[in-house]
Amino acid sequence: GAVVSQHPSRVICKSGTSVKIECRSLDFQATTMFWYRQFPKQSLMLMATSNEGSKATYEQGVEKDKFLINHASLTLSTLTVTSAHPEDSSFYICSAVQGPGELFFGEGSRLTVL
Amino acid sequence: RKEVEQDPGPFNVPEGATVAFNCTYSNSASQSFFWYRQDCRKEPKLLMSVYSSGNEDGRFTAQLNRASQYISLLIRDSKLSDSATYLCVVNTGRRALTFGSGTRLQVQP
Image (cartoon, rainbow over all chains, first blue to last red; front, side, top):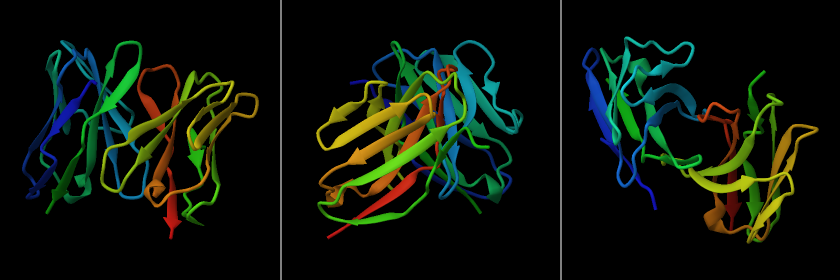
């Protein structure tokens, strides 16, 4: 079956640094990928829709200059958290659509900002 | 009002019990519905899709009531391994999914 791989699974960084998270579709091409964030005991919240070859579409309240999304190829989307702060600590998950609408999730990346 | 609402629980039930979760959604234009399961600190995994006619997969039964805008999940003969958070998920037509906050189930021996 289709697999979406996310890396790194866990990252700890100092406040003020930038962190890049990669999301890859391993055996299919994904023109659209989605980035979600989940704070403890809360639901997954859509942050942005990543479109191959064009600008990402951000949800209301998500700072596009802080969460940089690049979808340069049909199998890779990256999310960069710039100048991370402790309040950015969260579980970030990507997902990709294959075919008529089946959604596959990456394993998730747990970010801890000290 | 949240787009998708669920009782957070936790639901603590003994092994072998039957347990039911409900979920309501606010957007009447919602097109498809799912139940996902999420284990602690893991990504969500699709449990089953929900169809208007209702569908069953082993011990799991999902129902959709469009008129009242709610979805249900019934788990029969609960196993310890069913302990997880169950997410009600709605597709409003934007391809991305809207997740409920989840209902936590703890099956006890």
